[in-house]
Length: 251
Ligand SMILES: [Zn+2]
Image: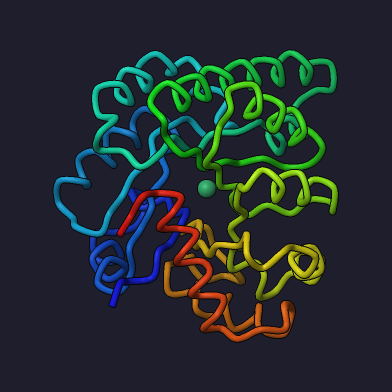
């Protein structure tokens, strides 16, 4: 039987022991955050079966935006070894930490970086692993539409019903993070999502209730989802698996 797919994990940030443990039981789709982690993931790819990687620059890592050319060169050179581009998207949390008069300019820089990555995704027909938060998600969707992006995963997405519908109608997917186990507001948001579009992820090693995020937390997420979505954990795992295989061309 095929191992469960973790659709979004910062694999290079796990310890070697955690990496080995994770890949014993799971197939991992890893996302990069900058040039350095992109190089690390390429290195790890040659060490592990059941590891699949996306390269990109995390939209909240503003000081790394200038690495675009370097990361783009890696994407072009290694495109046949990649399953996607990510973690890419638009800045949100980092904007709220800066002076209000700085925010529009930085957001524009983020939007520009995003569009450059989307151009690459279109050119090389790569899936995108996305970080989008709040209303600016509409701008991300407009950009994806402009380049006719067919395969997209909105990781840990929690937005209003219209945004979820816009993502759903385009045949894109949303992955649910283990935050669903303890966050009431997130639970309500997930409850409004069509089951058929959902995937599971760890976003590891991001911590949940004090515990380092790991792929095995997807099982607890699936159990939590049974009551929220009125279905079985098995069905959720099955749907996530089908969507993950389709997104990343894993079989
Ligand atoms: Zn992430």
